[in-house]
Image (cartoon, rainbow over all chains, first blue to last red; front, side):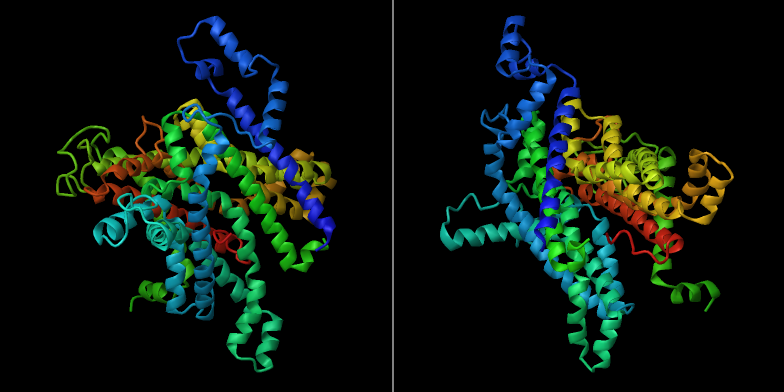
Length: 320
Length: 282
C-alpha cells in the first residue's frame, strides 16, 4: 500500500476528532443551567460560586476554555465524574473490557455466520432456502435489539433455565481459572447471540448480493468453462464478494455500540451500557460526555481501519 | 385458480415484499391517526388490576399500574409516527439542500459540503442524543432536533450524486441557455428528477429513526408526557419474570413498523431505481 494513501487517510482523522470535541463543547455550553451550580450544589453563596468558577476555569473566556478542553481530551483526560469522584477515563476503563468482550464476540459470530449463510443463500438463489434466509434477514434487520434480548431472557433464560438472566458471573460462586472462564462464557452466550443477530442480517444480505454479483461476472463464467467445480468457482467469487462486507463493519460500528448498550441494559451486563444507564439516573454529565467522545473516536478509528483494510484488499482504491 | 391468486403465487418475492411494506406502513399511519377511536382508553389511566395477562377486557393485558397495554401500544404509534415524520422532514430539508447545492456547484463548495457530510455521518447519533437529553431534559422537540440534525448525510449523498449526473444533461443545459437563473434550474429541472432516489433513502432512514427513538425510550429518556413504544419496553424490563405481555407487544409493534418501512424502501427502490443495489443492504 502506498504510504501516500495511508498518510492522506490518517490526516483526515484530525479534523474529525476536532469536530467531535468542538461539538461536545458546544452542546455542553448551550445547555441550560449554570455549571458552577451543577458542580457546587444549589445552596452556595456568591463567593462560593466565584471560587468554583475560578477553580474549574469557568471564568476564563470561551476560546480559552475550549483550548483547555481540547488539550485535556488529547491527553486522555475526560474530566472528573461527579458521582464516582474519580477521573472519567478510569471509570470508563473499568467498564470497557466487558463491553469489548460482548461487542467483539458478537462481531465475530455475526461475520462468520453471516458469510456462511450468505453463500448458502446465494448458491440457492430464489429457491425456498434462499427465500427463508432472506426473510429471516429482513426480520432480523427490523427487530429492536432490546426486544430480542427481552424475548431471549423470557424464553431461554427464565423459561428453560439453561442460561443465566443477568450479570457476567455467578455471584454465588467464586471460581477461578477455567471454571471462571466457563462461567463468563455461559453468561456471555445470550447477550452476544442477541447482539450478533442484528448484525448477522446485514452481513448475510451483503454476502448474498456480493456472491450473486460475482458469480455473474466473466471470470466466474471462465472458471466454469474451464470445468472447475462450483465450489471452486464460489471460492473465486468470494474474494470480491466480501469487499462490501468488510467496508460495512466500519460504518456500522456506531450502531453496534448502540445495540451493545441496549442489550447490556436487558442482561445487566456490567459494561459501558450499565455505566451509561446509572450516569443518566444520577445526571453524571462528565461520564456521558466522556462516553460520547470515546464512542465517536472509536467510530472514527473503525472507519479508518476499514478504509485501510479496503485499500489493502482492493488495489484499485490505493491508486485513485 | 382465480387470477389474483395465480398472480400472487407466481409473482416475484420482491413485489410481495413491497406490497407488505405498503400495507404495514399504511397500518402504522391508520393506527396513529385513529388512535383515539381504536383504543378510546387513556393510556396513562389505571383501568384494570395490575399485571393482568391478555383477556377479553384488556386484549394485550395491563401493566404494573393497571394501565391498558393496547391503549399504550396504539397511542405509542402516534408518538413514533410524529417523531419519524418530524425527523424525516427536517433531515430531508437539510439533506436535499446540501446535496443539491454540492452537486450543482461542484468544485470547492462540493468539497466543503461533502467533508461536512462525512463528519456528521460519523457522529454516533444515539450517544449524542443521550448527552443532549441528559443535559436539556427529556422532550420530543429536542429528540427530533438531535435526530433530524444528524440523519441527513445519507439523503445529501444520494441527492448530490443524482444532481451531479443531471447537471450535465442536455435539458439542463437547454434551460441554462434560455437564461433561467440557477436556482430555478435547480428547483424546476434538476431536483424533481433527483427526488425518486432520495425517497428510497428517506424511507429506509425512517426505519432507523424509529429504532433510535425506541432505544432512547428504552433507557428511560423518552418524553414522560407522550406514551411511546420505547417507554413501554423500558417499563416491561422490571417485570420480565411475571408479565411477558408487557415486553412482547410493544417490541412487536416496533419491529412491524420498521419492517414495513424497510420493505417499502426496498419496493420503492425496485420501482424507481431497478438497477441500483438495494439500500437496506448497505
